Amino acid sequence: MLVALPLLLPLWLAGAAVAQDRAGVTIGVAGHPVAGHWSDVVANVRDAPGAVLRLDLDAGGLYRGRVPMTLMRTFPTAGGAQRLAFDLPLPRWRSLTWRIEHDGRTLVSGALPARERDDRPLHLVVGSAATVPSPSPSGDDALQRDPARVVR
Image (cartoon, rainbow, N blue to C red; front, side, top):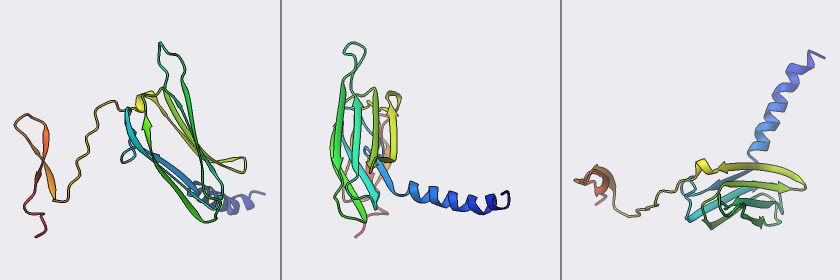
């Protein structure tokens, strides 16, 4: 019995690694959800046709109490790798949980408590020219063109 244990352990670890790669969820801009703004939601599954993504959000507070919200999206019924990508307006939350289920089993799940929420204003700067951060007279970082990195 003890001889078989070292032989079975690598197989069990390999199976756990494969199961972890089977599904994944990212929420927010570059993986950081920002309260009060539209956030990207990207979910991936592999070999789980018809899997269901479920997002549960409690947008309540001290005075309002619990305000539950649920969003469910179904992956296509085709086999192979599937991807769901959509934008979601995220209100301030007390808890945000997600899971992907397939045939009654949870493939992946996660949660973000309120302390993970970022309430700072969101500023996205998108441009085609090469830019670098540099200090401005106001003390804030500003983006300026880097002449050494501009493609001519």
